[in-house]
Length: 330
Image 1 (cartoon, rainbow, N blue to C red):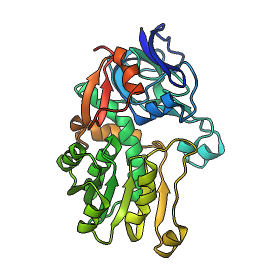
Image 2: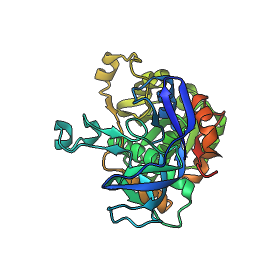
Image 3: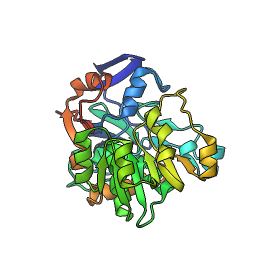
């Protein structure tokens, strides 16, 4: 079979490898769709540590072709929660499984979904409807991560919620905030993503802080940073109103630093939260994708073949792109 693997920083290739044999407790999945995440590009650039020679891809879904000893029937469509917590470390025992010190992340520590087939723990697979658009299953993982961050932010009806960044996380956060009853603004310089933000539920879509201040002079009750850029992380607390909240969902490279003003945070009592991974939210995300509560079809910018995956990961996203989906059978 073909698989897109990261051999070392800057060396990503789609190569021929054997079809994996599922171990006890695992299923073999024929991958239908796998999304290219910003994390995949970070891994390619060496911004995050990873195990060399592994198949990338942590946002994927597919059909079970071998259920092994798991009891999951062949032909079942599943979405794959990529994080396997140990359950025994101090953080797991405290219920903070996303902070597990022994977490095995699919697509980083074990082979992931940029492949024709993937062997995967049955315990981390969530069943999807048989009639779901195969491309939509690839959105369950990013939605699960977004849900965790938005749970932290806890939008209240009538609150003003600012989403910074018009990528897949930002556009899902827009929808979640709107469902919670917020007045939602999307801040992104991309005119294409501003328009998409309005289509997916944003009440306002602006490109600059000045535009935001014209509408909301006092700032937002909740600011959710989804861009993963140092400048937007730095400005996020400044855009929160006095007594407001900030959630950082975007991911910056390891070692990158951001300057904040503690005096301002103190005297305006700004709460800052940082959201990591998807603890106990993957099944909820799968349900929201399956029943259409969250609209994901507008977030698909293009589909590409597995042979084009390496180049797509090694290159910046196209102008206005939200999510490129790898279709291994394409």
